[in-house]
Length: 444
Image (cartoon, rainbow, N blue to C red; front, side, top):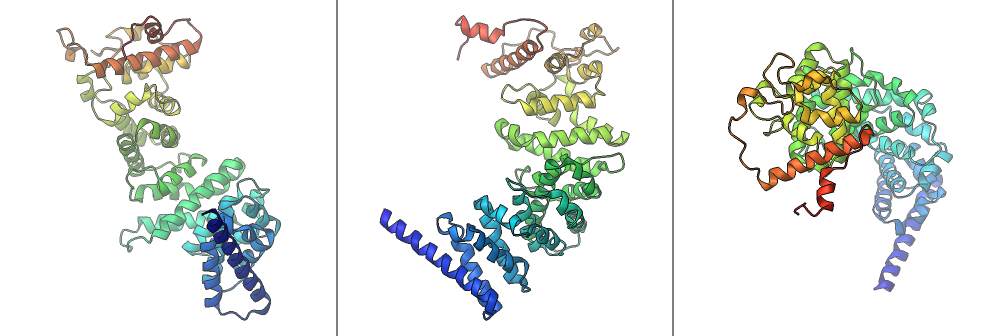
């Protein structure tokens, strides 16, 4: 079995070597037809997917051959096939990335992005994206000298126009693939060199437009949707470029669907950028848009018929996530968003979500709570400050015994609150859950 595998690898390497030899010879003699060149490159692409075959491709001479076909040959189909081979090699190993730089093809790659062609956009954006990892690439030079920022902004404007045109034909899959690579590249460039983000400022309205017109996948935080959200994180959002109400509605719909579709462990990994983007938006939003966000993210009066956090509305789900022991980054992000939507005022914050949900965040951030807030009529209303429930809606009879599931949820909530309180260093208390476990009073 091992001998067969070894023989197959040897044959694959020999085929790769032979193809590269033919391609290099044709660069000098130019005897092959465009169809023959493309056929050889297609074979090389397939063989090159197996790293055990690809030493000759990964070598500097192999990358030079592919770069010459990719950036110097006039036939578009031949050129793009060579670029596919290049992108595969750069994905599989780091060395080809630096080889491309050393050969001076990074500038030509950035200039190739000027072409209004979605295949070119996909391939070149991926190649430059890969250059941002463990190489000596000069992103500033690509932006300033080779117009990388202009090309990215122009491509994003084109995507925004196509998605906004409801009369257009069904989108080609390559459109979405190209958009994903472009937004990934934009994120990396602006994250690695934040001073370059200003060069992409004109793309902010287009990015919001793209998000608002995208057909959301199920589940929603994937592909170009996730990549576009990430790209916006490094952009400066001003009052002039903040999204419209309709665009915010799409973002809130993404959040709503995500909290239903993903497990908590999945949300912890993929949802914080969306919540952070909503925080950036609310800070620069018009009064009308901000009020709209408050109406959809904070509990309404109808929710106060029960203790807040019960039910399946988006605000209820967010409140439960905000105290979940399974979450760290997302829990903090949600609480901060709700606090900022409450005008960063602790009194308003407690009124909006109840002290039971607000206490941990306030204590962790050492935000003083007005003593008057712990009285039921603190703001002239009839709301229980701890649960957020209307006093008139509270049952007059003792609560029925909690189910095991409800007891577990309450224990988790108390665990988080005590851990946050201890983290402040203000008081030295033992978490009652730890104490119960130590004393053998905790039932599994």
